[in-house]
Amino acid sequence: MEPSNTTQLELIVRDQLRGCSAIFLALADPIRQDIIMLLTKHETLNVAQITERSPMSRSAISHHLKILRQAGLITSNKIGTEIYYELDIEDSVAQLQAFLATTGQILALKTP
Image (cartoon, rainbow, N blue to C red; front, side):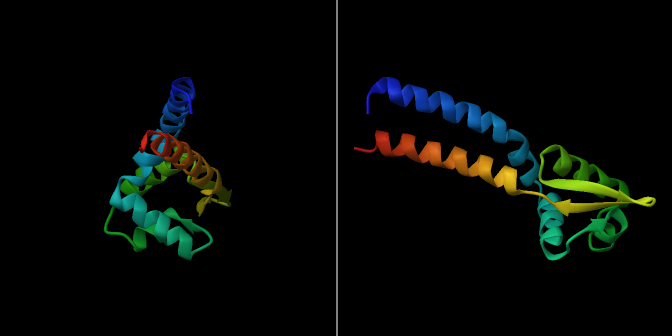
């Protein structure tokens, strides 16, 4: 492949990487990883239910949930006075897969 095509791929992967930054940030924390794992086992959980299963305080859990929601990894739904959270990672997984695929293309071009 021509160098200009490699440069084009590098521009694409840079944009993809920047688009994934919030996901990487959200996934970097062990508490948020634990919350995601909890949500893989339970369809929905509220803050109190997550707090019961964590050593963290309710306010700390709320903070982590906010980061996960901003990264697009979870969604929230208010039922009565409670807010329930559920995993919603399909779009994030697609973003990460696209980044990895483009990175793989670049590496394949650079490998002799």
